[in-house]
Length: 187
Image (tube, rainbow, N blue to C red):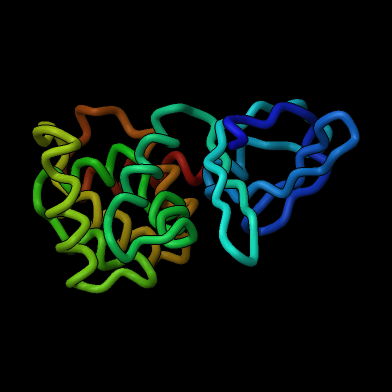
């Protein structure tokens, strides 16, 4: 099992990076968030989950142990494979995902491509107790509404999510979240 790869990023594609580790190039599938943090020529260390199947071997990489643990928790849900789990983590921040699961809000999960109502309910059922109690703060409905408002204004899902992630915690209403996010996106 490969626990991590440490080396130089030599190539970036839409869903993976190639990391040169002493002359051997490892293809590591990563989330969009991780992809944004990696630059060609930069040295990196990615925590990995190694998947071995009859016909393939794949590495899935993460910048933090927390992201890797959440990925592995998603894999423990029947019917969720590594590509689906990575897709979930690419769309939802780990904090938002935890909040949606612990507060039984399947509506957020169903916005992710490939996740229907039954799968979202299964994820909540399987992981709710493993993730603990929900957190106070912005409700997911406000988060989803602000995200959808920014997308309707022409921003990509990634841009909108990044802007909303960088808002101060005291900004909680949907309209205030959109206003502050627009200021960040306008810079």
